[in-house]
Length: 218
Ligand SMILES: NC(=O)c1ccc[n+]([C@@H]2O[C@H](COP(=O)([O-])OP(=O)(O)OC[C@H]3O[C@@H](n4cnc5c(N)ncnc54)[C@H](OP(=O)(O)O)[C@@H]3O)[C@@H](O)[C@H]2O)c1
Image 1 (cartoon, protein in one colour):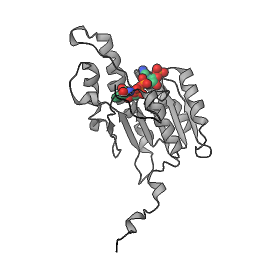
Image 2 (cartoon, helix red, strand yellow):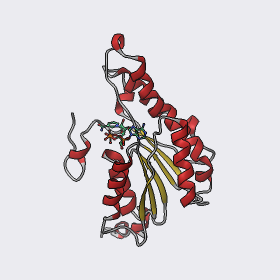
Image 3 (tube, protein in one colour):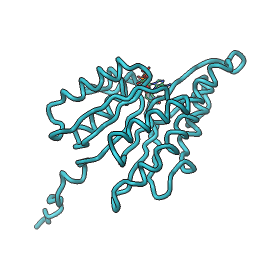
Image 4 (cartoon, protein in one colour):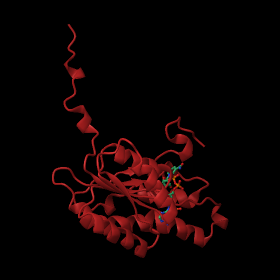
């Protein structure tokens, strides 16, 4: 006789529930960030802050998110435009978030820039653009969010999720991009006390074609 008790998973829906969670998604106006924000809201998050540089893009992303039919009652996406490659931009985002909530449960540090060029012609401006957002911006964001994250809920720790890239796993023609993700794939030194901080290196894809369809590799 076979034992079928393993088919019965205790309180299965709660395993994937984010009921009541408060999240920030940087680069949430499109692509992976917008998909992440949608997933957070559909999993039960109560507030999701969307940040990117362009105010209109943040607004239209939030309009689409706030029209999702299966959000939790009262759940809302809130736009906070900011240039996260600067400390002033990061501080603006955190100050605005603090006006809405005393705590944050999830920070998705997803906004990122890329630049591909051979070493010999790789400009300093391009290097700075990538580094200022992908490395300095993430470091600043985690540090400035630490007080909000540390007020996260007791037994269930707050999380920082950094979108990295498989480009960081090996040297390639996109030297600067890979280099930045070698740093952000190893984020332990950024972790505020007691917080969980995984790096997520997605494979390359075209975001618009990924959502709800097959994964398309470039
Ligand atoms: N797509 C891929 O194949 C792939 C693969 C591996 C890793 N990744 C990484 O995954 C993340 C998301 O990729 P994606 O393809 O979804 O990117 P994307 O479509 O280019 O979106 C980037 C997002 O970041 C925002 N952003 C750019 N510069 C910013 C700044 N200075 N301050 C604040 N926000 C800024 C953009 O909005 P604004 O223009 O309004 O600022 C946008 O919302 C990135 O970190 C990327 O490097 C992507």
